[in-house]
Image 1: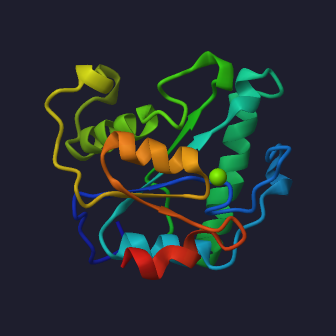
Image 2 (image 1 turned 90 degrees about the horizontal axis):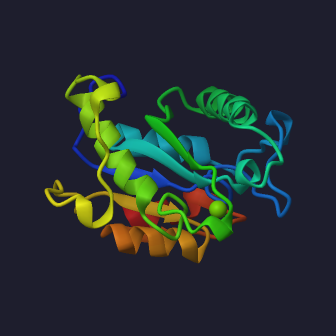
Image 3 (image 1 turned 135 degrees about the vertical axis):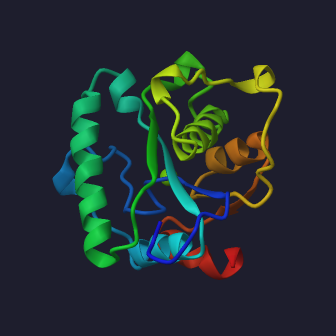
Length: 190
Ligand SMILES: [Mg+2]
């Protein structure tokens, strides 16, 4: 967390393309294609300074379609994190989760299903408890019975799939304009 700030227990779940960086119909395929949306880095920094942890949840079907690998995605996310931190040193991503599945696989981990949000909450909680992540058994859907209070968490996305995933998970959500991204809804959130 930023200096002097303690975690408030809530998570800001952020879609990536159209929220943090400029999206593309043909995907973001290389680190060089990452272009930040105006003030998205500063908005992430603000969210963390207000005590939230930030979890990026992004559908990445190019992996499931066989176009490229999760290693390539890791390079893209490394570049994204560097660019964001260049603009705001508090704008760390606490966690980045991606769904590699193609749409036709119907995966629970692919938005509009809430699997990534469910996983994000459990992974961040578990990391905070400092227990061994390798022994963590993630629970999904009806199998996850004993859920923590998540009423102050929220999701920001630029598409209906993001909003539906948040609704299914049970948190409030904000639909942003993909040309403005996260900064365009900050006044609505806070
Ligand atoms: Mg998007």
